Image (cartoon, rainbow, N blue to C red; front, side):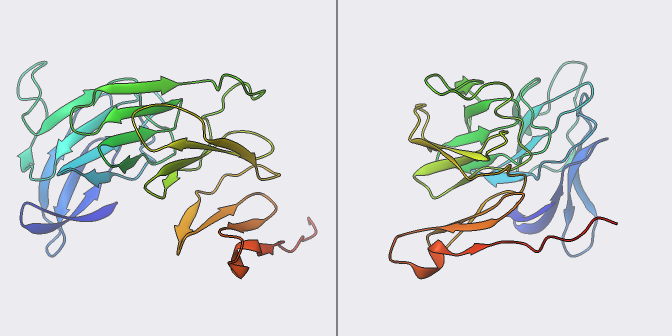
Length: 231
């Protein structure tokens, strides 16, 4: 769940299997719910808030939707009639959902990295681009199946790939696809990266790595976790 300020009050927004919804932060009372199937039976990704919209996604099982819902929604915003969406549902895609990674909003764009690298216009849901492979690289097969969520410094997007060497794909955080770099970290990465004070932090299966400017001492720090015997 996430906590947002919407419609003049603080809300707890939850991605759920049977329905998604928001609850009053102070009282716990339901503000709105959306019972729209298919919802995907494992709603792992965290909701994302931007442009006065809430973005939900899920995958696994029957459905894998991506939806944008207004943050001032109230009441039951499920389908008003058969096949007629409620006005609070701004846009949706039925088969673009993420299984584990949380999407990210950068500027006008919403990026998803579950089955492919997808860029959508956050406000309209228009598809800007979709990439399942990386032409010109020797990386093949299921690259965007990582459990890790992408991060951004506002200029570039850093996307962990599903490879044994823990490759990080760097692309511009714009609606025009290009590859800035593809860098291996040395072993598979399952945790989501983090950014703080201009430093990128990555956790692979064997190391915690901090990457920053050359004159930042902590940017060269690596932590080798203790290896324990298996019992």
